Image (cartoon, rainbow, N blue to C red; front, side, top):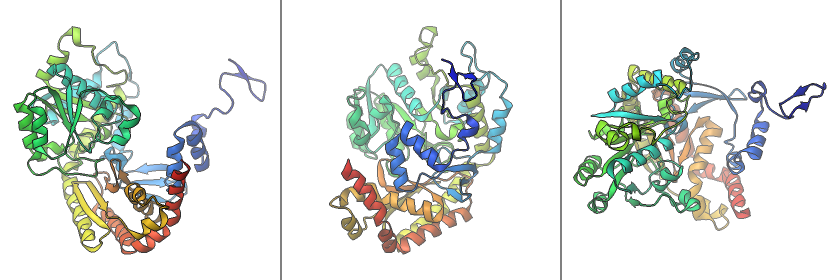
Length: 473
């Protein structure tokens, strides 16, 4: 339908439409209003209460800048999606290199994605060979679950309590927090949870010999940065093999150098049947995901022309994403980022443990490489005074937020709590982070913990606002 403009010209563009040139010039208030009106209003309100709705306009390496020109250290790293940092010039150059190639052309064999698949086979453990390239971690998990069922002829899926594998329907069915599942039940049937790190419970389920796959994270990220007991993964591998259950290792957050090895399962020397990748695979710029499996398992599920189209993706393996992924892998390997993560991660964890020894507010420090978590004890009287009878809820859901808010708003350091345990804040900076930058974060945390009584007093107003919003609901 043609629309008349003010100068009486006809256009197909409706009034109020925001062109790209104007979109990038929106101010903070305009951005917030559009989120509240056209996107997730609840999320926008929550971020606003914590003053987390800042408008960031530039990013490079470990730093981002807001619309006021203030610089921030990014120690959240997009939940592990920024192993190579913000806007790495080699990844931007890779996109420029392929900009004239067809990006989407299904009636062909993709040129760049063919090289990506070979590269993944070369760098992953053991005999993992055949990849399905997709767009996200949840999509990689969905594909891995389907592969396991098709290849094994079984239906049952085993997962861990406290796990996080995504929020699409299949991935959600093997994600271990009821809060995210309840509204969408019934989920995919045949999914059973076992405690993370407990071998007897796993063996009890697998000995029934009806499980297609056991899916787990080598480190539980959203569960609160939980490290399994020594030898657990090796025993899991043995039990899965014993009972004919395929082992799916979810390396979406832990992979590509984050824990000090290229893949976290390499700390235990195990080879999964299926491995899921995403997040940093796209270099922090283009969405990219993948699962990779053995030739034997692939052929059982998708071998032959009659099965070739059982699982496909329109945008999976597009030229730009594949180019970004190849460039990201080159950077990770050439710059020895796993080794850097091991060294600087040990430095970070040592500093956090020193803080734990000094401040009772810290309940625990956990981590591997540059994947670290700080779990808090409850501040007791502060929570009871401001909670209007909701002290438990405040303690469970907002203490991590208050600390992260103080880091953001006072010290210009970006962090966040873990989804399945909001009482834990995670530190996952780009793998190129320096010890000097880590010192800045440790000093900021020391400042918060040393004055935690005053900090929690100052946080009362924010906590009251959060709780009042719950009461209104």
